Length: 110
Length: 116
Image (cartoon, rainbow over all chains, first blue to last red; front, side):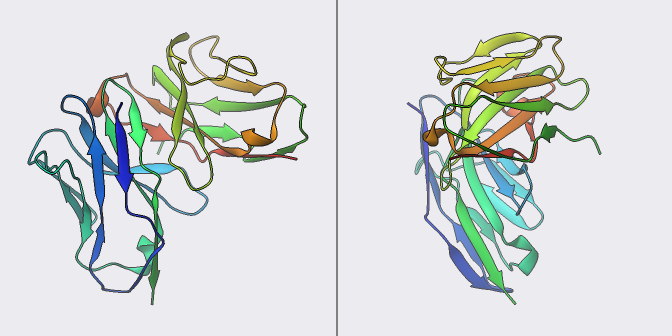
């Protein structure tokens, strides 16, 4: 079945550091890929998405590229801020159903 | 900005009691989803509605869980009887329609259930 694996956290960075959160997937066919973010006390929000191979999703300085050959969708940001502290979920949609990874906690220190 | 509303935000209940959660989706959204998020894991779909009809409840433990969306607007998820393993965050989401990446799912803040 479809599944998503993402790097374990927590990831702790200093402000302005470079961020990478790894995500790989297993799926039949060609799913759409997503990154969601969950700030403390809030629901999940869509951060970015990509619908086909080599697509790059980007939003708020974050970006991720759909790599079919490595079945990956790694999240990156060049310079993180304290306000980026949250839980980040990688997800795929195959067959109209979202399948989420376990989430990665990001903590950014000032 | 329109949001998905959920209540209560927190619920503590004893084992074997009944508990219910309510969700009001964004106005005009035909598709409604209930997810369960166990601590340290990602959300898992329990049930999906298209208007008032269930289109996927394959992961819903039907011996104790039930869900309804009688008029195709708001929805209720019920657990009876609650078990210790039901402690989790219950998330509701809605979208204009079901369609993979075409229609974004908007999530509510969730109901955190603790079963003692």
